[in-house]
Length: 248
Image 1: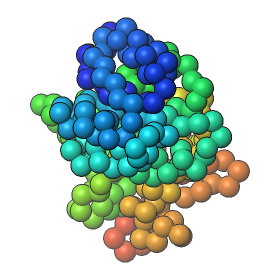
Image 2: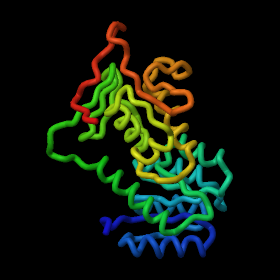
Image 3: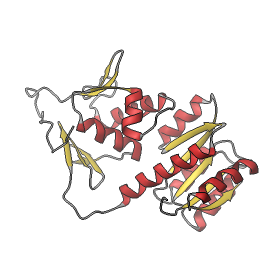
Image 4: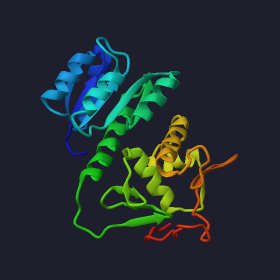
């Protein structure tokens, strides 16, 4: 059983809320409920939750605004619930930094499994293990996997948990191309889902690691396949080797 967490479920449909809450409680989690935007923010202010399961269509103000206000309290993992077919909402949620999303109608069991996965990753990121740092480097990019820190040219990168996991994986496999399906499975453990998730995270990573995101030279598209992290040509000024003990 996963370690117990405080989960805030925000949905204006009481049936959905109660079913989700029941599954989360079976996993050992404590669950609080909110049915609109203002009450969700107020509940989070009383005690910052470990995870928020957040519907986007809410009375008062929508889930995006709830997300923005709760995130002011500090790092809070968020799983967004979106209506099937609302790709714009899913992409916007990911661009804002949501950790995961689930489309309605959904399996409550699937949601509880995803919640456990997000919580596990958040706890690993927050931990401070007493062990040697595991470093991965390509060019001026460096990731400390143990300390969950990433830098570019020595400057810290503000990455979401999903972005960090994707970059860490690609740094461990420089020069190797992966399909979007492979990245979903190998990086995040998803056997199914919307492949646009990968596209969104690749675009966000390029904005943070490339000199010119419109003409990427590190995180490149392999047409007809997917994506690859390319070590720079050793002859290029400032090029660095892909060392750092990253095993394949």
